[in-house]
Length: 322
Image 1 (cartoon, rainbow, N blue to C red):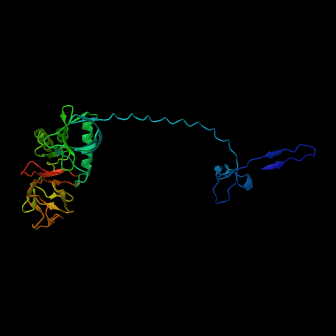
Image 2: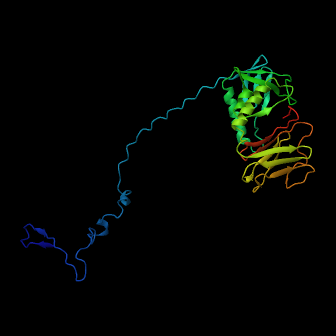
Image 3: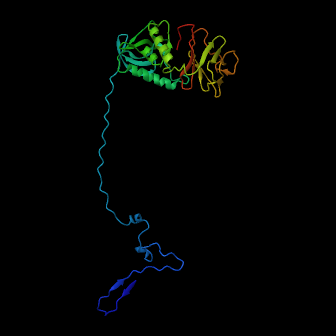
């Protein structure tokens, strides 16, 4: 409550401010929310949002901070070139193409070298692109910083002009090392069989251990081929139905592949056939004739990830051309 004391005009006016408790109306609460702005002109009230006055109220500019200079990433020095001895001629490794092929620069030009005795997955093989990449990496790791020594066998080159060579790093035969890791199957090419015994032993070790491309113990299934009748037979040797949806049956020589459709299963102890040529059956290759009757033509049954769960090693010869 505001009151003024009476006095003469030249005397000081004293204002006295007295607080009095609010009296509630009958039936109303005895306390009310405190509103400091009530009754004040709008221009004098506190803004509901204090940040709203930021534009009107100048603020000091922030003190600029120095941005630390970025530390340059050191560039690693280039790896020294891998030297390659090609039949006594010094060369330099250019590129690893896949798990069994690489290129070399020699004084007379660039040459492609095909490692003898093995066959690694290729990038266009049915379902094996990922495995092909891993096989190529494995060969790069085996080559490392070299040096490599290449040695010819009986035939120096194939029909495509590629050099056919056994490759060594130190005392290690690269074909056997790659096969032992499970990244290559055996590929005997008669008469170039000087190192085939060591390669075959390495492949057998990898197959028994289910390394790399091999998964022969993953499913109880066998594969046999009747090349004359053009009939491939899969047999489920397990005690439960075998779902082979998305699997591949592949002829290695012709690189033909049959892709099993969704819902394809083999009952325990039952057979499933894949036919071509004049044979009749539900599952059929697109090609009219698939299996080569005059030359070896091994076959593989592959899971969708490309790993081999069954293999038929054509026993007719130790030679296959790829």
